[in-house]
Figure 1 (cartoon, rainbow, N blue to C red):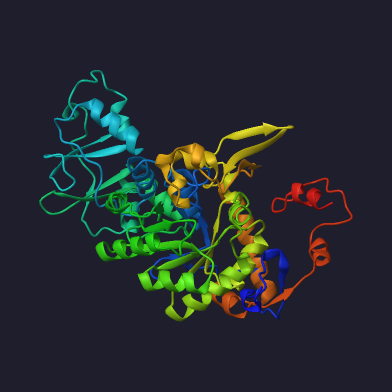
Figure 2: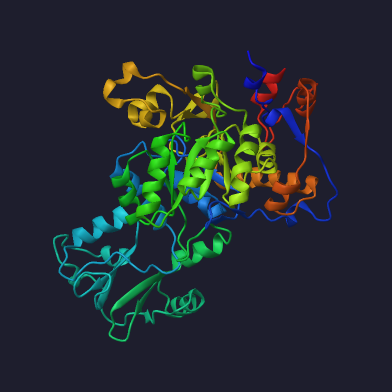
Length: 495
């Protein structure tokens, strides 16, 4: 073998530790804000993976409320994926500029169905049934309680007198005062001609106050991303119409012609933030940046459910992959996302110190209440199902394209690059995120870096041995009580 074929050593999270440095602040005083793309900022550096046992609307909402962002998976029909995006965008608003409306002649059963489908408790009624029509009333769930004829018209049930309204430029603070004074939950924003211009609800005001660090767009709505495959431009258009905040062109091999051409097509046709991957080399990142991406996603085979490296013999250990991609991304000002291989909160600190702006999580989130996986009870303990998008089950459901395999050949011709399994049940997302972000903040404190950008630029590593890794984990003890941020299973596996 020619010596030039051995490019470099590859290292990953368990091969290194960060060196401590002088700190003049407490971990609670750190700033975890970071760039996700050229134009989107996160308040915590966490993304959820677009996997069918990880991210649908429930988890995306919960993560955005904490300051991160969820990416809806694409193992769904276009209609279903759009529906998940809409659920997130409508889950919390500042001012709803395009509220759901009906006309006064609409049947009451249509109003009931609309409330159930959109998870809303009130519908403005306009003369022509459009979001810009003249306001003639409002129908709420409270009005619906007294319905005697479900076939009747909305006009017979709506509130049409003494409507509480405000001008279009009403602030949230002013809206809260008006709603409290009038003891109602919805404020109709209208112009001088009583044409509807928006809606503010007390529920949304409460959510804004409850989650001050939430990741929101310019209209106060939670941000959300969606994964798309190569050449899925029809899906792209519908997701953009649903006001998705960013698209993730998701492929196991992002350094490929189809991915690059898809990125170029999207950026040419639409004004939308585009993330693409996965890559693991400087050249791969450079080609995606040349195509116009707003962030590069890095990781070939580090995931717990991924068998790509074993099946194909290809991959790059994650710390090396991140540092390689950053060599291309840093001069261009393009953020890097480390995707895969995160098992502990300390791995997040290491990924960022290696140059990543944020990390994408799969297995750590799959065990949460908000993930779509099923709960399994085994030996008295609770688990949730988790599978790789390269597993046979996921490929049958639609992810074969991600691995450049022809769906029309049938499942018997698939060559899986992932497995199916279970992960420990971890409870609610908010409590879990508190722990892992707390671990990141502790790491930033030890490194003397008060911001994510400082950690990226000044974090320093030392290589460690297998004995050092064993020393780093709990040892010479039988753990009898679990810690909320360290699993006994791992410690027992090390014994």
